[in-house]
Length: 112
Length: 111
Image 1 (cartoon, rainbow over the protein chains, first blue to last red):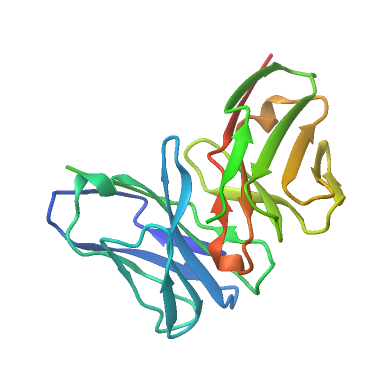
Image 2: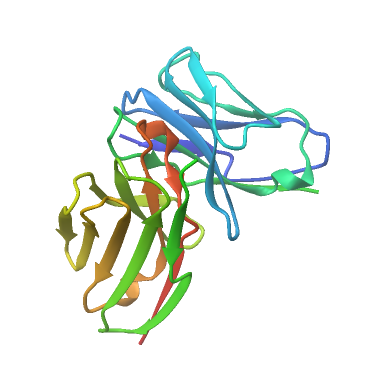
């Protein structure tokens, strides 16, 4: 198993540009989440999904969209990038409620 | 919303010394997760605690959840350079996809 994979690893965007961060898992996990990590703020939940076709907002959803058309994939879309979205983004998945989450290696995004 | 406070924020210890990291929650914990993050990398799961008074160990790392389920501690015995990194506690508010994380404790182990 490859586990949780994220692409790209690094990305630089200009303000106003849009892009999609990819996340895939091959463990047949129902639960998937997106977090952002900023210095001194820990990890904050952006969006999450409890299964294909079901998504919900987390703590900091503004400026981001998600969809879950398959169990394996959970892309995160930045609609119009802003410097405040400069961060490291982590995707995570877990099998069922109460189980450990598996994290991807992260995407380091810089918005200029 | 549930808030997690970790202490200390950073820690420098000499190799071979013991250390403890604390995680205090503003609400009762249904599940408490400990993760380790190496600099510039993703998070690695260490342990999960669910029952008040529960204690788990893996190699030289022991985690405990207090009886009232509002505080957890992570203890490392005889620290090694491989223990260096950022330790984060995460709280389960009832669904595994909505973990709330503390701000982390940065550990350095000197030779």
